[in-house]
Image 1 (cartoon, rainbow, N blue to C red):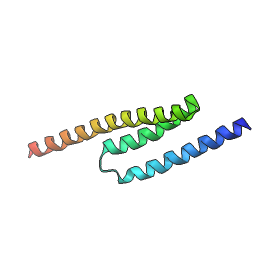
Image 2: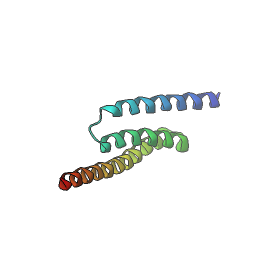
Image 3: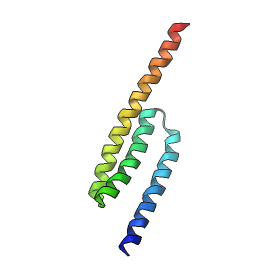
Length: 89
């Protein structure tokens, strides 16, 4: 019975992650998309590692923060490339 419950939780988490990935299409930049996707992955990792609500919340927060930082760096790189392209003309 316990195994069934953990499988149901994992399936719910996967469905939530896929839904979050679909919603990220509407994000304006990589930082927003990264935060959303990172939050979903962090929630999955927190649940898998800790198995309780507290671990899931912590995983969500850490994942969102890490995703935002990575996405923000991607946005900065795109801006540098765009600015470099303007200077060449």
